[in-house]
Length: 148
Image 1: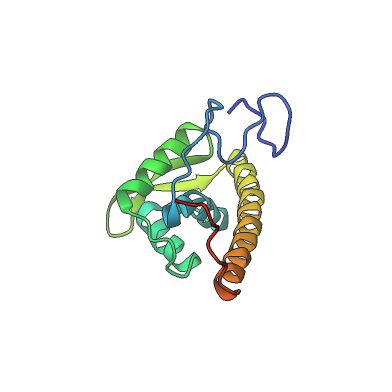
Image 2 (image 1 turned 120 degrees about the vertical axis):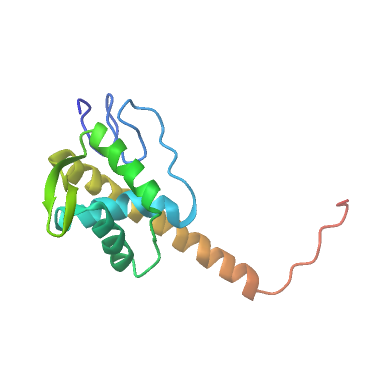
């Protein structure tokens, strides 16, 4: 990975919402948008195999993020191509070899950017939630005249 991965302004700096080529990533919507930071967090704790990661992410998020296995493996391949994770084949204890994934230094940096991004989103959601709550709990506003 050649770009400097820092949060903020400057030439060709990469954030969690940018792909390695600098284009804007589609972060997705809803709980699926949390898969990448959940995966990075799980890998920051320990190396793991794909199916173990599914279980780890589910436990880590209290069941809020339940990865689709195919989607998880696609994400792992993309992150490996970007240099965020590495993998190697390991002998299975009771079966075939399994690929074990680990976070790289670039992956830890990306996870730090996700922390900043998630904190920004949380603040925005808190403000929006309070505004929506106030709007629904406050007195009903009369309709404006002249509207059609």
